[in-house]
Amino acid sequence: MPVCEGCGIRTDDAHVARRAARIEAAARYRPTQIKVLFLDSAPPARIEDFFYSPAANRTGRLPASKSYFDELGKTLGPTLMASTEEGILTEFRRKGYFLTYAVECPFDNEGELHAALRRLAPTALKRVQYSIKPSYVVPISTPTKELIHLFGLIGWGDRLVLDGAGPFVDPYLGDSRKQAQFGTAFGDRISKALAVLP
Image (cartoon, rainbow, N blue to C red; front, side, top):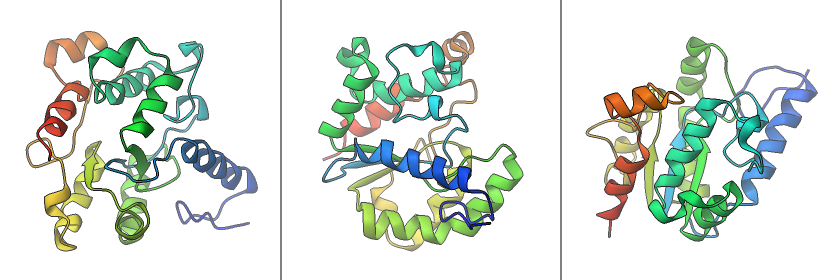
C-alpha cells in the first residue's frame, strides 16, 4: 500500500487519486502570484464539498460546505455574491486569493487530524514559505491555531491576518439562523481585516 504524501498515512490507490483530483481542481484557480493565502486545516471528505469544485447546481453541496463557500466569497466584496461559484472562483484567482490546507487529506476523526497537523506542520510551513510565497496568510478553523505560533517562529508573524489573536472560526457553519444570532460568520470579518492591508 502506498504512503500518501498529503497526510503521511499508508493507504490505498483511491485515496491517492482523490488527493490528486483535489490538487488538480485547485491548480486551475491558483493565481500566478498569491497575495492572500487562506489556510485551513484539512479539506472536506466529499469532492462535491471541496471549495475548488464549482457547482452549477448547489444542491450537491452540504449546508456547511455552501456556507463555507459563501463566507470565502464574501471576502471579495458584496457585489459578487450574486455570481456563480465559477465566477467567484475566477475572481478569487484574479485578486490573488488562494485556499489551501495544512493537511492535504480529510480526516473524520478530530484527534487524528490534530495528530496529523502536528506531524505535518513543518512541511506545511515550508510549502507556504517556499512554494506558495503569499504576501499574507489567513488561518481558518480551530486546528490552525497551532500553526500561528510556528509562523511567528519563522518570522512570518507580520504576514498573519488574525481574528483577535487566533484563526477565523465559525462553530455554526451551515446553520444560518445561529450564524445570524451569534454573529459567527467569518466572511465579513475577514473582508474588513483585508481592507486595511497595504
